[in-house]
Amino acid sequence: MSSREVHHGDGVAWLREASLGPEHAVVTSLPDVSELPALGLTQWSRWFVDVVELVCGRVHPDAVAIFYQTDIKHDGRWVDKAHLVHQGADRAGIGCLWHKIVCRTEAGGTTFGRPAYGHWMAFSAALRLSTGSSTPDVLPGTGVMTWARAMPMTAVVGTCRFLLDHTPCRVVVDPFCGHGTMLAAANAHGLDAIGVELSAKRVRKAMRINLEP
Image (cartoon, rainbow, N blue to C red):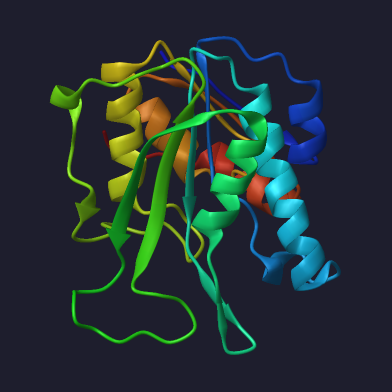
């Protein structure tokens, strides 16, 4: 039976101390500027890139780091989180295996505040994928959302299948696990899971949530 640990604490501090091997994949969505209002946009952007660099630097060369991020509009301008993720990955010297788009609304629809798509990206230092292992680059919908800030189920399930089919990773690590959607999906697919969450309320939810495979 797959296992799940959820630690109450700072995900960044936990990552700095963690020992991650080829069996560990880090899969996460980094907090939005709205969740760290004390930083302001400029400081948050620097923090975001620094944390991506930390994640990519801590992942074993044979393992993967996977991010799901949705852009935001701030003061009438778009903040491209995929650009920030790629900056951090470049600084860590880790390459992009794929960068997919998950549609959040039907094509042709208009959204306000956030775009109609999210970025789903995978990085590895040593792992390479053959052309024959390619999968769709644009996913037509999010699937079920377990809560407003959750990683969409299409990306969650797709991540588990990717890890099982193409990597040695059998433990999913989410240092900003929220309600634990990624952890529960990992368990449903036979993968072990480790989460870290600063909110005690969310830790309790992350320990209880269960999903069908």
